[in-house]
Amino acid sequence: MPEPRLNQRFAIVGTFVHSSNEQSLLTLQDHCLGVANGKIIFLQKWDEDLLTLLQEHNILPESVIYLKERQFLIPGFVDTHIHASQYPNCGKGLDEGLLSWLHKYTFPVEAKFADLEFATETYSKVISRVIKNGTTTACYYATIDTDATLRLCDIVDKAGQRAVVGKVNMDQNSPDFYKEETTQSFQNTIRYVNEVINREYQLVKPCITPRFAISCCMDLMKQLGQLARSHHLHVQTHICETRDECTMVQKLYPESKSYTDVYEQAGLLTKKTVLAHGIYLSKEERETIKKRRSGISHCPNSNLSIRSGLLDVKGCFEDDIAVGLGTDISGGYSPSIMDAMRTAISTSNTIAMQRGPSYTPLDYKDVFRMATLGGARVLDMDDIIGNFEVGKEFDALVIDPKAAGSVIDVFENDSIEDVIQKFVFLGDDRNILKVFVAGRDLSEKSCVEPLNIS
Ligand SMILES: [Zn+2]
Image (cartoon, rainbow, N blue to C red; front, top):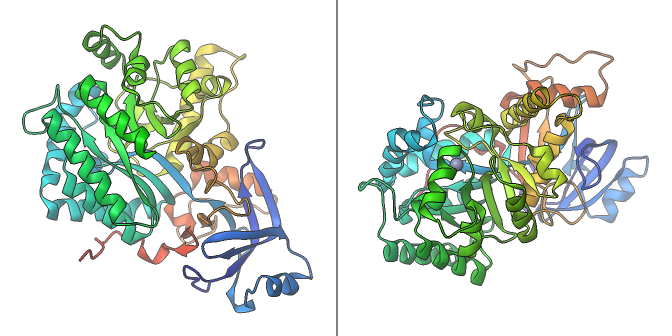
């Protein structure tokens, strides 16, 4: 394959698979998609007039990528909730429930990021790993350390990934070795936001990140909410992940009607707000979230691994709430959104077994949309990314079900839908041949070696 670069004009010919608001799965065979300046300029059926079409759009015949038989193109994956700083713990320490897990495993590892060398090495590894797994956009939690979080932004920018990145705020109910003083926490956040804006990254944005209501006081959350709204910034936090956590929030904020009401009082709920988990939200709380147009990040691997609970995604959809997928490293042990698709189906099947035949669980098409367009909607980026609509930026993955080492066996009579379904259930990073973000091919950078950051 040729190696198109940013700002180059190129086209891809083959099968395209994506979603729309109306349909969870659309397959377009024998189509041609054109890209210029990182954006999709056309997508149409490929016929004998291909040359004329290319000429019209100023695309040279040598800048056309022809997908091979059974290969197909999908939108890049959106990971709506990932703690980049917890990557060293990925795949270990899953023997505790949330609140004790945080103190035993998570806070000690996050505290290490005050060491910039450790931060650089670790963040480089996680970014390389998730890009290799097809994550073209991510919503990252870093740590409370401002400089280390800025380093994460530099690494993401250099790798070419699209991201919102948050410096974490924590000023209460946290260990002395990993905690901020309230005023300092807010001042550091202002410095962080200004610095990210000044660095003028093309694809990296700052995110306001109060860890959760337990670890931030109301004063701090109100200041953060004000900052987010005045600068139109993304907000990310956790909500209703476990029952113990909900009980503790109720005790800490007796004046609030509910967990959601704590964030509502703080002014943290906007259409740019990502709420991780949301398993134990009441009907009334979901109404508030819908009203504010905030989104939910469903992290099924994490919810099963630290035994938090089962999110009823179908119920959220019925309430017209946007739900995307998150890996939630390292409560979740997999850095792959492909794993999140499968565990979302397992979670939904479990709910179906509990509720009986009247409950229709999520299917492979639903989770495919959640991994792409759904995630984009949760991040309020569905006008820029999420599918192959003309005018959107070209974030895409070339999938090869027959790639070297693939565990997918394709049979002659398998339809395109069969192959997509097999990819959803059996695919891994070996099936992802190319990773494009804003038209730039990141595949060559997706090694697991640390990137050189000067
Ligand atoms: Zn989390």
